[in-house]
Length: 68
Image (cartoon, rainbow, N blue to C red; front, top):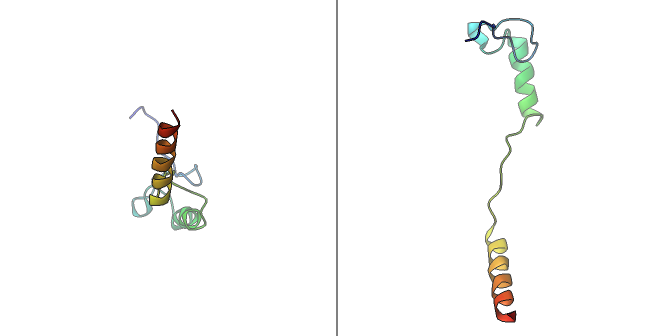
């Protein structure tokens, strides 16, 4: 580590307590959980195309091939 101490990611003031790591208290842990449950955090994802979209793409490619 570069000499800097880790701080609670919620309050950014106190150091983490082992019981609530990486948070400093139950309150900060609960605030974080509330953000997850409320949808404030999100993990970006790319949805794969569904079967209908794949069939449309195949049909479009076939039409374009027949036009040339």
